[in-house]
Length: 205
Image 1: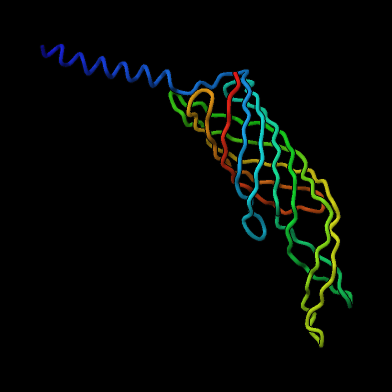
Image 2: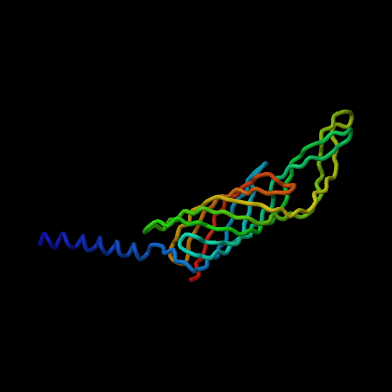
């Protein structure tokens, strides 16, 4: 009787471990992942909403190349313009930016875990449209302030980015992830800015 009483809990424990192993995520190679995300950008002025989507392909359980599109309704920028008397003035403004880039996720498999951390590295293009900003500059004197129109030309800049994140696999088909990343643009717009995002993904076997 004692042996039977001891055997039943052991059998139940073994059964539970078997189910857990079956339900653990499998990072299979040669599957495609699609996903969408929302989040926030942060830079030289304040935090702003953003969103986008991506598609990735698992070359192996670790290496996952991807392509991604993001839209930033406003990224803080800084501009220096000439004013009267040979002086210059620097002002802050925001401008919408579209980002299209490719890169690689490097996943870190953890045995029997639904939580998979990863690093991310990428490079691509940042595109902003032309626009006119009206800027008020304190000039002193009798007028006090001067308002001038400043044309911001359109620009396509190369940028590199990097960061990391965590995937949580609800099952082998569906999961959620969180990611943080920094961008380093080139060209006229050189200010480093970042983003944090939260999204869902689907695996297509």
